[in-house]
Length: 544
Image (cartoon, rainbow, N blue to C red):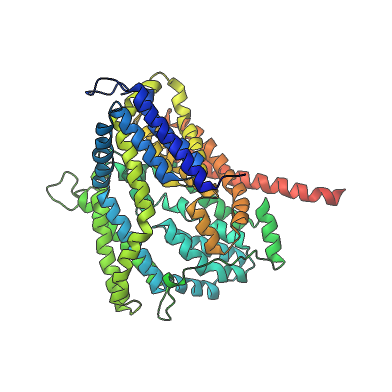
């Protein structure tokens, strides 16, 4: 008889905790001054435990916490009191203190998302599209554009694009599976290349010395999976073909079977107001972007005459502190958006105030993952994991050039198995950046973490964004996963080749301006090849 999944997960977590306690009893040394596990393989065991538990239980919160606990025990040389002090002070409290600014940004962003949904600007975009979009290609591209426009948060994207664009896609007989894919393709992949987004805020926290935003922006051209997904969606739309199970779904849609499936939808958060216009969606988002960019420049010293980076755009962005600037800019944007929406009589003051706690509630899962992943980073830092990994790679030689491709595959697998991008790059980025690979190769390796995390999240049937994309399109979840998987694997395969090329090319002075165009050409060429093979297969029965 099969065990209930929740019971199985509890048993696995309990066994892991027992194993850690047994280690504490059997391996405890007498010295309490320094850990004998510093800069040894044991410094990597906490993230390995977190990864292993996440793969087994498909539950990221408890897995990360057990990893934090194991790291604290190793640091404390299995002194339980000292370990709990490490968990509390060096882990959780330090993590919360270090990420307080990011928490504030996430909560404010959540409130803005609620406000924009309530105001009805998204619905207005859908009405505009229904009257102006005349072709299938136009409907696909309009859905894509709306998804790109709503880049500030993947939850916001999934909750909005589906409900807005379903009537448009249904009119042009686009299958719900295809709609779900476009929603998913413009959620996490777009957020991961947007400097003003909840995802960027999370990534920034895992980079030391306040250089998180600078690293994130420099990594964007190397985020091959996200960028090539954009190329893929546009190319598929313009070429007018599909393959795999998606082709069958589209043929059925042309015959009248859209593959629709009713889902419970929270209509309370999606307002429809006759006074709402497309501008009521575009203007608030532009306000958020401009406000955050100006705040980033201000914190970086762009406007201060006594600053080293006065009126220096690149210098100010490089020296800014996103944990201060993003909440600073988003708070101003929130106030301006509330004033604008109230002036337009789209919301009331009461509604705007109700949006703040609702925004916090919406961001609780993200905040929990961020706190636990940062705590894990802190305790592995206490164990000297960076020193150990750097020592391993000192004599790696040319193998370092292939490290980004390997990291990409590992991140894909981990995110696919756990269904979380944030947990994946939260574990991997500190380890990757702890190694001295050289300036450019470190950026490529970090980008491989981000791209792999997005790819695995995109493919995973247990990912929250994948599930929400199914719900947003009102598509059968299993059908969404099965139709999307060949597309995601195609982009992932091209991305893997690109990371090999990027790693080798940077060693001879060829950077993203070489590898990214190469990847785009390879992506389009791959699609032409797939279409050629597909057409040839379809022609064979006729020849016989």
